[in-house]
Image (cartoon, rainbow, N blue to C red; front, side, top):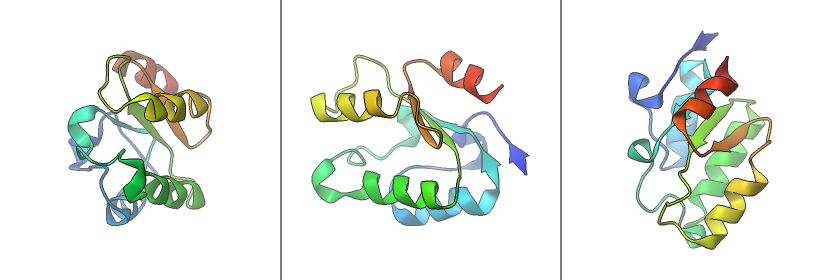
Amino acid sequence: MKTSGFARDHGLRLNTVDDAMAIIATGVQRCIFTLDDIADDFFVLENRRAGEVFQKLINYSSRIAIVLPPDHSFGDRVTELAREHASHPIVRFFETPEDALQWRA
């Protein structure tokens, strides 16, 4: 099993279910995604992509960290989602890259 720091080191992004499958295929665990690695409309809840990607990662136990700073522009529902996933075993949100790196250790 590979370990890694940041998604960009592996050319990984969060956008579609195909991206979830790419994450799973790499075997990378606890990969860290920053806002630069996430499609602008990924968290538009109406398109359901975030939920589909998260469910696929959960099904395959492929752990990821998402760095979502407090001043993000995705709105209150995404803030609530991040709060709910702050201690999730598979898809976990952090406010800083340093916190995400600590989780990887």
